[in-house]
Image (cartoon, rainbow, N blue to C red; front, side):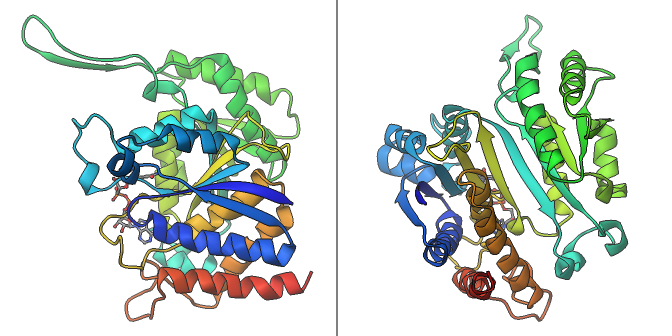
Length: 369
Ligand code: NAD
């Protein structure tokens, strides 16, 4: 296969973790005889500094031409001024919007060897394997907003949670299709006891569910969902939620694993690439970690696992994706740790050495085929 992958290293630890993921993709291309062409572009704070725009036109154009996009992270202290005309996060929102990426997928599977790092007890974590799907381009983050001061001098702020049935339907379809390939359960998260937008959400999800009789649907109020994620996390298979509720529960769910450095994500839309697959944006769930940027100690696993999702979803290369995921699991099982995963006194590897270890563990897997 020939594939064109745009790489956006971004800011902070972004370039460091992306280097590791690109090394893994290069190894996949050699070992499975594919040609992956990577083009690196500016996005985020580094783009503001270089060309005065967090998402340069040239970067968006390249992403629109690509089969898939791999992103590190954006942001940092330097660009934190809330009153600045442009900010790194604006580039990210514009990129998601520009690529029409309406569904964010965050799988959460725990590595048995790392369970001690989780704030939950091991017996609660047994069997945890969930996929959280968050609606990404609608809801309260994109509804009408305002700030004003009334005649009495009181300050006001307003945001609007708004969804069309079509926006709910397309993300629900992704959730039900994903569940068919998993344990066939969908938990839809809303606040239908209070919000009209949630009542529309629930009605639409029920309509979609009628087309998937093999999948069991439960509706969970978002407040209860935050509780159940801690009390019965292994009962969840696929969760689907609107933008803000999804934002909150994905961060909560990520903590079950102990380190956000391990966790990948994929953002998908309707647009297809030349391989008949969705053109996606793949990135770790963590940010640019300015506190450790440049030290070469960041955990690259989340970005490497994002590259595995890229292989699966945007290139249709399931065997290759599994080879990467298996190599990561074996690397961790063999006791290799970056500093965020190492327990007191345990030795740790650099970002580059950890990525090299994954490449090393991939070779025998491919040799076994
Ligand atoms: P963060 O995820 O960058 O860091 C939180 C903590 O986790 C830090 O202590 C950091 O050192 C650690 N950490 C994160 N990733 C790690 C990794 N791979 N290996 C080891 N340790 C890791 O969150 P933050 O500190 O709240 O945000 C920092 C900057 O990142 C901000 O500018 C924020 O806006 C931005 N951000 C960007 C994205 C994105 O690009 N998608 C997402 C979240 C935050």
